[in-house]
Length: 83
Image 1 (tube, rainbow, N blue to C red):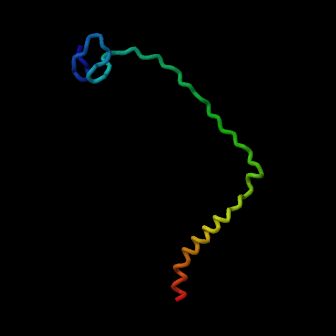
Image 2: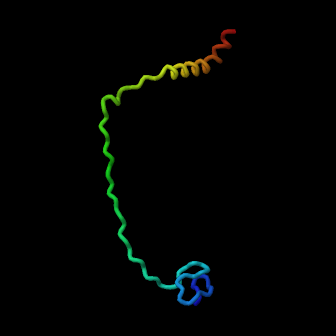
Image 3: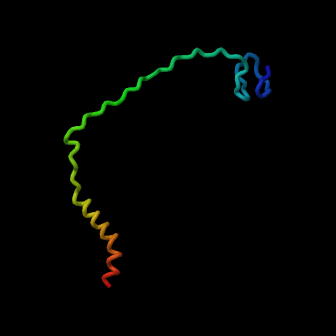
């Protein structure tokens, strides 16, 4: 038997060519299985508690960092004026 796709010799009774891997004849189609369908369910939102809206206070360390960065940005412009 000869493969229709690549022309190589194939063992009689084989269904797949050993050289190119293509099928050699009409195969019996496999029965199709129904796909499993999962319905979409929206997530339930948790009701916001009144305590969740309370703003957190920033730690003093954050304000010190902001102050140091602000001084570092402004100081180069103010120092030449002092001379």
